[in-house]
Image (cartoon, rainbow, N blue to C red; front, side, top):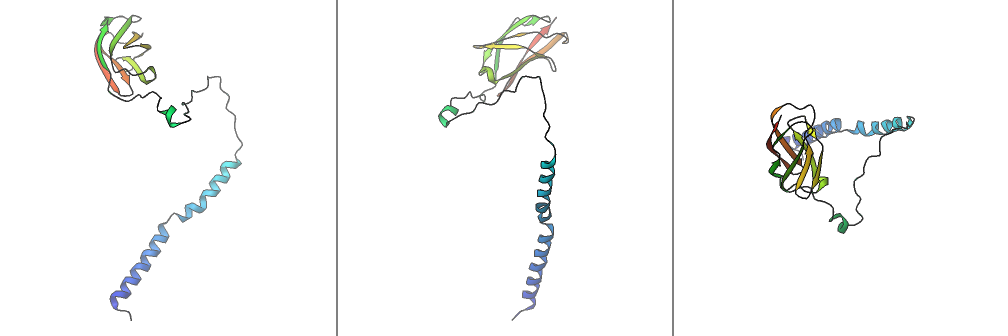
Length: 157
């Protein structure tokens, strides 16, 4: 025995089922294998390069060896002193401080925006060269690590 309310609910559920069937991505499921076939039919291309092969991420055999990998995240670097705190292009600058992390974690050194410098990290210090072509005047010497960055003012003569 159906009532008017029961009939309306049955019709509403049927309409909902039709709408869901219409908007389900069933058509994309059927189209996906066709796309894969087209990709397989393309001839493979060999890319020749004279560049050095890319370094691959270290592979760890066990969780024990993975735990010995360098950890790059922690506190942002702290710059204690720049020696000297002024110079011209080509001059060597020694940055002393803390929280530089391991050499693999140091991302870069720059003398103002867009003026990256070459650097070498040792225990508790970074040695860098003032880059050519930078603007003269007061700039921010910035050290960037995986944990953050810190800056000190530097005068380029």
